[in-house]
Length: 71
Image (cartoon, rainbow, N blue to C red; front, side, top):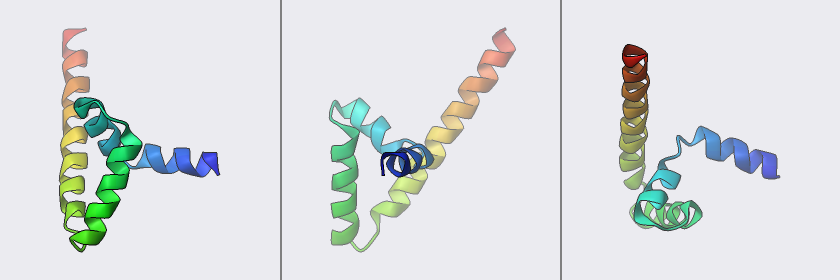
């Protein structure tokens, strides 16, 4: 069961952990609030989540490309 949980957390782009780290709360708490908001608002936070996942991937790509230039 833990391996399934680890796989899902790694493949979820780390958005909830990132937000939790920035706000100073646990990533699991952010995930829980995200799930509650998704049910309450009929899934509209999913669009925000996908936008944040895209933005985090773009930032990571930019950081990697900068490191290659400066080496």
